[in-house]
Image (cartoon, rainbow, N blue to C red):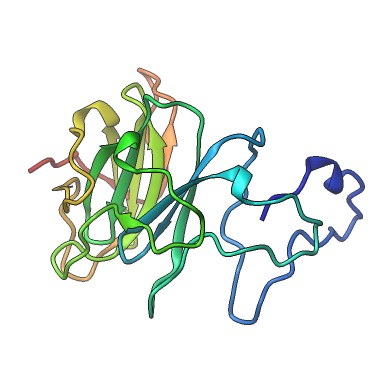
Length: 205
């Protein structure tokens, strides 16, 4: 759903309701928009839908909202993008360490509420879609696995590929490991990755 920012102006100490959730649903992401942006929603089964936010009317804080994407059995939303730049690319990463970039213009604009189009081919080899992000060449990524493996990867080293492909391996994982999350970071020459995880070299194959 979409709500004007002024509706969140008087926040109580204990917080205020942002959305009325249906049973079994959960809030995963909140983004700021200008009222005219295109929106992309990605799902774990590898689908993505792009629509203009004008298709979503302004609602109150406690409203449930409207359907953005139609989910298949066992599918769920993994990411929400607000597109502000037609030159951007969409990065997707799967749970078994595969990733790719696709041109935003590969995602045609449709009406909200549909199933969307394939953004990555999810198979037993690559796993389900775990993360989706808007990136440009100058960005860098930190990719973290559930067993604490960490890589830092330049976005420009990931080539732009067709939307309906499985991508390339960006990190080689142990048999029972999987991707936990990815983050976009500002590149700094002297910056090091800190934490308990083991830092390893990026792998592109």
